[in-house]
Amino acid sequence: MRLIRFGEKGHELPGIIDAHNKRKDLSGFFKDWNRDFFEEGGLHKLANWLRDIKSLPDVPQDARWASCVARPGKVICIGLNYSDHAEESGMPVPAEPIVFLKASNTVIGPYDDVLIPRKSEKTDWEVELGVVIGKDTRYLASVEDAKNAIAGYCISHDVSERSFQLERGGSGQKENPAITLTP
Image (cartoon, rainbow, N blue to C red):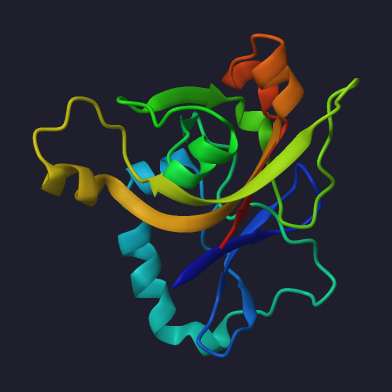
């Protein structure tokens, strides 16, 4: 099952892509694919609704594609997570993960405009794997517990401003203008 969201910015609605690659509207049954949905067992409830998927309304063909999940509480990123990326950046592969955050308002739909910072000189982008965490977690006891916290995966288009990051003492908060989430 592929969760999608659609509609005008600020008024997105939940949907899915069915087995025939059609977008289906689930806004009559669910408010959104947000924290409450995941925390309250929404994926299990959704599985029950999908038994009669043919009766669900289609999403209008011209409806805007939104990010696949509603604005998350956190966007946690891992920097230099590929050795090739570290090499092309002229940096050593880190011994420990480089963890940084992005603001939740950087999450946009796959066809939305990316806002580039003023005085940007070296805007760069990467395709990343996004992991959607489906419940509040902290200090998990095992790899299995971590796997059980994952609600799903998405494709993320990660945009960074390299001159801010590499030449001006930047951090994740200053370098990254957008994350695009696609189902």
